[in-house]
Image 1 (cartoon, rainbow, N blue to C red):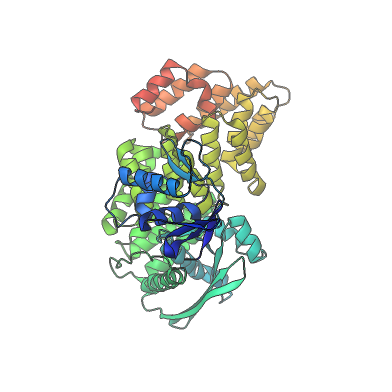
Image 2: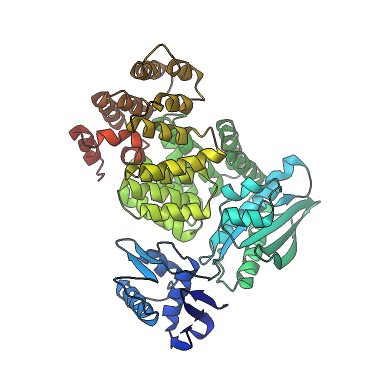
Length: 556
C-alpha cells in the first residue's frame, strides 16, 4: 500500500512504520491496520462493530483489545486522549480520526453501463449489468461503493468524470458497456482514477446468453475480482447461486427494477406486474419475491394503500424470498423493515438490519432504514448511519430527508432546513421534504406556514384549493383540509398520520392523539418512525396520552 500522511506523521503501511521529523516508530500489524482504516475514513465515526467487522474480521478479539490498540496508536502518535489532535473518542458511538489524512479513500462509483444496441427497450439489459456489478462490489468490505440511485443521475453523459468524482466524492470510476449479439453478450469495463484520468483496468468479457442469470453473476464477479486485485483489496466471498434461473424470469425482473427505479407511482405498479410475471415463470425466484415486498411495502408506508390491505402479501413475499435465498442482503433488509414497521419487534428488526449490512456494507437503503430504526429508538448512532448512507448515496433525497427528520427531532432546526434545501435543489416538488419544511414553519409560528403547507400538497388539487382560500384564516383553512381528508377517508384510504399532523398544526392536540390511538388500535400505525422523528408531533411529546402511546409500543 502507498505511503500517506496523518497529521504531521508519515505512514508506511507495508513496513508498519510511522515517521515524524526523522524519528520512526514501529506499530504492531493490527494497530497499523486500524490506523489505515481510520485514515481512509477521516472524519467518520467508526463504531466498535464496524472496526471488528471490517478490520479484524478474522481475529478473535473484543472491546478490551480494541481499546488497547487505540491506546497504543495514540501513544505512538503522541496523541493525548483528553485533548486529542489525532483520534477522538465519541462516547457511546466509536472513534473518529480528526487529524488531516492524505490516505486515498477507497471510494468507487459504477456509472450506468452504456447500451450499445441503441434500442431503448434493451436499456434494462445494460442496467442489469450495472446493478449486478454494484451489488458485487458492494460486498467488498474495504471499498465504499456509491449507490445506483446516485450514479443514475449521470446517465446522460453530459457531466465530465472529474465533476462526477467531485459530486459523488469518489476517487475511482467504473465505465462500462453491454450489448447482446446473437446468443452472446459482450461487456466492456474500464476502471479510471478520476484524479489522474489514468486507466487502471480495461477488460472485455464475452459470455453465452444461454443462462442469462449466470452471465450476469459470473461477469460481475469476474469484474469485481479484477478491480479488488488491482486495488489490492480482499474480494468478496463468492457464493454459489441457489439454482438455475429461467432467462425469461430474469428479463421480467430486470424490467421490473428498471420501472421501480423511476420512483413514480405509475411505474411502481408496472414494476409490481413485472415482478409477479417473473414469479409466474419461476416461483423460486428470491429477488422477484423481494421486489413484490418492496413495492407493496412502499405503497403502505407512503399511504397509497392501507397497511392492513397488503400486510399478508408483504409477509408472504418476504418469507418466500427468505426460503429461496436467506443470504440476500436485500431480503434481510426487507425482513427488518417488516419487523420494524408492521410487527414492532425491535430486537428482530435490529438483528435483520445488521445482518443486511453485514452481507452488503454498501447497501445504502439498509443503512437508511437502520438509521430510522436507531432514531426511533432515540440512539445517537442514528446520525452515523445516516452519514454513511449519505456517503454511499449522495444524490438520493430519501437520505437527506432521514437526516432532516433526525435533526428536527433533536431540535437542530437549522441543520434540518439545510438538508431540506439540498433536497429541493434537485427535487423541487419532493412531497415529504416540502411537508417537513411546512412542519418547521408551523413550529416556528411563521406567517409563511400556510404557504409552505399549500406547496406540500401540490399533488392534491382539492386540498390545494382549500388551503389557498384567501378569504379564510390559516386555522380555518387547516380545519377545512382536515374535514376534506376525513370525508375522503369514508371512500378511500387516508393515512391517519396526515390527519393527525394537520390537527396538531391547527392546535387540536387531543384530537390528534385520538387519531393516533385509533390507528394503533386498528393496526394502522405503520409509519412508526414519525412518532419519534416527525417534527409535527414535537408538540405532543410532553402530553401524558402521547407518552402512554409510546410506552405501549415500548418506545423511548
